Length: 468
Ligand SMILES: Cc1cc2nc3c(=O)[nH]c(=O)nc-3n(C[C@H](O)[C@H](O)[C@H](O)COP(=O)(O)OP(=O)(O)OC[C@H]3O[C@@H](n4cnc5c(N)ncnc54)[C@H](O)[C@@H]3O)c2cc1C
Image (tube, rainbow, N blue to C red; front, side, top):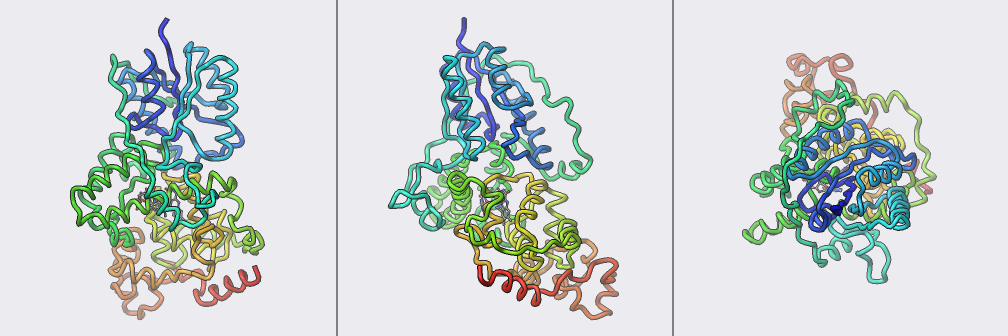
């Protein structure tokens, strides 16, 4: 009888630098990979854009696994039910996985590990989804970090393990597409043209980013019209590439070209925010629902369904915010500064609860991430640990003028403003009547008037936060 291992993949849909897969394939004659669409009620269900991405990612993975001679099973149920049914069906002797850090997922994994041991199975878990695991980094007094600067310094001093190779190829297997019952939603047609999904695409994107865009990253990342960031976020979300692969590939660029070292440092610092948010997720479990700074639970939010709808639909009358919200809808992505501006308008000027915005992003972003999405929403809303203070309220007009001076980004996503001159593209209401007429803009008809007065709502927000 041959030895068989089951490798349970979750947020690590790749063959390279996959510790669980690597160790199973080095030790066992036969390896079957399992993915479970988990229905455990304690887990946060995936948003719509993520589900779309997952479907394509599983197919890409299935193809790669078949080419490597590894079996692949995709099932839907609670993790434990599927796990033990598959172990029995496959007559597996062992089960391996890479660790995850969300509170409910950890409980599920611990229960399965306990039962596997009772049933006499070899059960091993590995680090695979972060640079440094949350419990392997601590302050001088052994506490979890709550401030990014020292966390980043501490992380930079730790050794980051070298990526592992993909398992050796065995006799190829037949690939059967997964999710035959999956019906792609109509809206996903617009996403298709923006993305290539899967491990090969992720590796190519990384190479292209490092070769082409990295040089301009520190400045370019703030200018949404340049679209100059790596766009690796959804690939990271599903683990089509690991942060360790990115870390070492970027470091290699810095090692060959000393002039690039500050640029590499900036990029890796941003990547480290992802680990920092996982650190928060691990120690402060309910970050999608509870403010990390408890006093913010007392903030009185507005119930304003009309404002919320205008924000969701990209019809607030603030061009850069509307461009961002429409990009989110069309592409399942939004550039970081614009994420901050849209979130600031919602939580501060409109005084709508950050959790409502977080859920909208959760549904629309292909990279919707259980640590990064709530972590960043709490950063903008001021209730995170190392957050932007509540009184920092972005002005979307001046931010637009500063970071999208020629209006490229607004023109791309809000085409009804495309013909406005640069001077008015971020504030159409300030344009003289003849300028609006010449650009074909009729405020209140072709494009909305601003949904709120920025100055008055700023004062209202500060008032609401006073006394917290
Ligand atoms: C309100 C709000 C919600 C957000 N929601 C998410 C989310 O659900 N998922 C997500 O991955 N990021 C989220 N971010 C963080 C950031 O905007 C994205 O990671 C980034 O824009 C993704 O584009 P990129 O891959 O081209 O990033 P790059 O600039 O190329 O950065 C490379 C990688 O570093 C990490 N990174 C960069 N900036 C941040 C950051 N501020 N926080 C944490 N990690 C970062 C990401 O993994 C990113 O893919 C959010 C930011 C805000 C303000």
